[in-house]
Image (tube, rainbow, N blue to C red; front, side, top):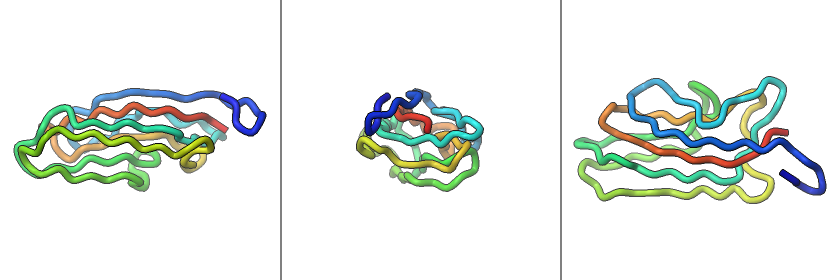
Length: 116
């Protein structure tokens, strides 16, 4: 990936999180590198029977930079996060993780970015 005339290693990932509690990596972190996220697509693939939350975090157990609560029996939703050419900068060495609060809530996340 080229940014300002320099080449960087592209990073991409897609995952469906179907369990509660344990964060799942969408894009793994790399020691000594910083992940910059350009584009994230999020969809709720299974509607909950009660109010549920999903979030994207900077590393496992890290800071949630996207947090969404969905009411019971709500219609399907999807979100697109576009951070532009330079991207959203995560903490050095950290990756992008997705987490849900209950097993009956499926969240699918696709992300594109680069390591610098």
